[in-house]
Image (cartoon, rainbow over all chains, first blue to last red; front, side, top):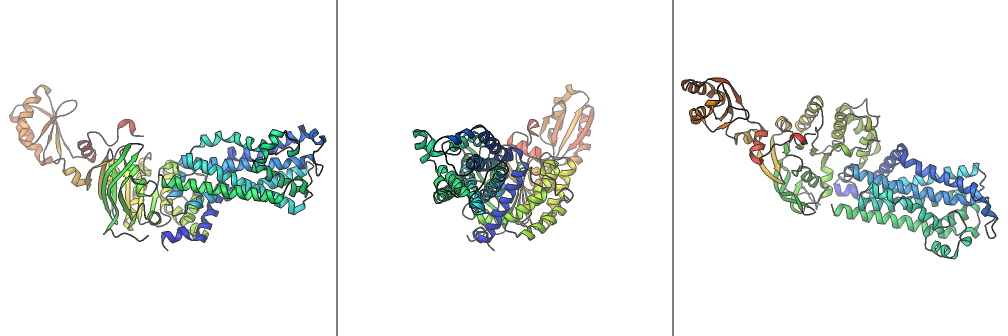
Length: 267
Length: 322
């Protein structure tokens, strides 16, 4: 078996991707500074928002389907997914800074597999996170009229956003190789969240903010999550949500693969 | 990419150049390493050793020149190179949160092994480097010697034809260093070509059949350790005089034996191809001249002397030893 054949054999590269994803997951579970932001922070914010702003529910025009926590949990899912993706990029930058990345590059591995391993791990983290958050929401009174199908669709959408965030931050990591820079991007999560109607219905936002949300693809994802969870198309379009999530995932992963190519060619 | 015919060479490097932001780290290196050889690549920090290794292991592209490893060009046939080599990088390339067993299995997967094959190869290598008991511990708990042994095991997962060891014993205690040397000798006995970079002269003297000395990005000398030492003109006698005031008289009397230089702290150093056989004549000549001798020692040249003579400085500066 020649080296070129090895790198181009889909079965071999699938094994490589799975092995790299397993490694990323194992390391993420062992690294508290990566695990806590992605799991604890969204739940804390969910608790604060659910308890502190529930009066907003009484505003005219606020959707009536489902509970208030059931409405805002879509924002928590999105936040968790973005943070999970962010930690994936930071971990990749850590691999570059620490030298582990050289071990991967010195092996006969397709460069895209290195990126895909990270993205696949984030898809798994995003899905696991979504299951946890939805279970916590259920305990605290959320109801999901969409049933198992709706919950599954919400989990898939969340996972796709986590994968997309991993791709985007992975691209940054590959271009800069700097953990510090990735950490500085942390506030971007909140910019993305609050320029999408993560915790509030779009129709109740100010006209200026309403206009901004139209250009944030996460708007359609979070509305899609709500729509599938509550089986209410008035809350959003599942098709638009899936289209945006798929676009983000594909685009960000392609960006990371291009960044990898640029990094290895420029070495 | 078809393999390139390079006679018996495992590594062939011609006019290799690498620039970093206008600084020339490698400046026209030529070298050839035969199959089955241990080649010592010796030089101080910043001499260009690691940059050369990174090019040979496809982690860096050369600015100019070419390099062929295991029959594959490092640029156009990089995949073939990666398949054929094992690389033990610096200590930092191990993830401290992983266990030894996990890392070996991952390395197996990276080289295309199936899950079971990777696990079996991992167990075999854990035994080989005596890390079975520590296999499920995180690498953060490993000692320096254990990390180096694991690094070596990782480099062997794919049964490489050419093994690159980048300063494998830096920071190790003498016992760990000796254990690693034994392993390198055993690998070489099995036919593996070894390209070893080091700052330690003793390491290349112990292991390498041939040595390349690199300084400021250029090969300053190349040959077997014996050949390099012979270039210095043979051994020297260190002569301590009872009366240092008679040093100049002694120098004149000893001129017939060979070049005579001052020793730091007093006394003379006479380089003579006769070595120990010259002790008696030297003492006799000084005695006839009425110059009392305190002590005479034979000093065999070391690679450090060679390095000093070739580059004007020591291979390992005292403040760079760490």
